[in-house]
Image (cartoon, rainbow, N blue to C red; front, side, top):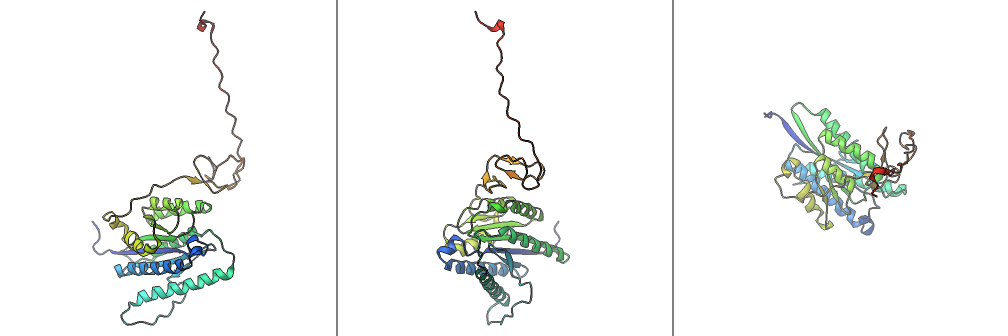
Amino acid sequence: MADTNEIEKSVLTIILDVNPLQRLVRNDPKVMTQCIDAVIVFANAHLMESSMNELAVLACHGQGAKFLYPKPDKPIEIRQFDGQYEKLTLVERTVRFQLQETINELLQCGNLRNESLISGALSLALCYISRLERDKAPGEKLHSRVLIVTGSNDSATQYMNYMNIFFTSQKMGVVIDVCSLDQELTLLQQACDITGGNYLKISQFAGLLQYLLWVFLPDPAVRTKLVLPPPVKVDYRAACFCHHELIDIGYVCSICLSIFCKFSPICTTCHTLFKAPAPIPAKMKKKKKHSDVVH
């Protein structure tokens, strides 16, 4: 029987990919602003569902990942406006201010990379959720989930990091949702399938906010009662460690379980030495006995 005094909290952590080299952003820079607007409205909708709900927002790009909200150091001072909920104003102003700083730092750095470090942002999100679990008050129960909003390509170079994060999330009971803005993401589809989350590649960017509110706002406990897009067929092929490409058949190191598309006498991950596979012996032809010969 459930404890009637138990306090349930829904913790939503949003990971927003702000890499300026995303194809959508390169084609139309206004896409980033529209995406940020939609994510902020979605985040505030989550907070409006219950006063007990918690929120965290992270930004990731080719150089790393960082928290946008809650701000780790001194929070931004917000002047209260008439008729506006102060917490929603705090979320919007903090996220926009932190994002502007992050993008300015990226542009000043100049060393931009196409590959966004989503695995690093996921690691930060799991650490944040773990800290909330550790510091929760007696009688509190947390329902944690992570939403990734990205327009970047799939990255097989982060395969090992992804797999560790996916199964850690499954063990922690953290649901991972993915909203792809541009292309199919095979590895992140696996994350949704392993943790019980939703994966959606939107068909029209103009409807991003509607997709977020429809598919990702409801808690996982009530999603089974809603009419949602059917789950995608997940491709569980592994990525080789040598070329970072998905393969059907390969060689697996018996020590560290690294995967290679071709045989190598030395594992490049743990440096274990292997013997070359012996050639398959030719099949010997069975000699006919004298009695089997037909005269």
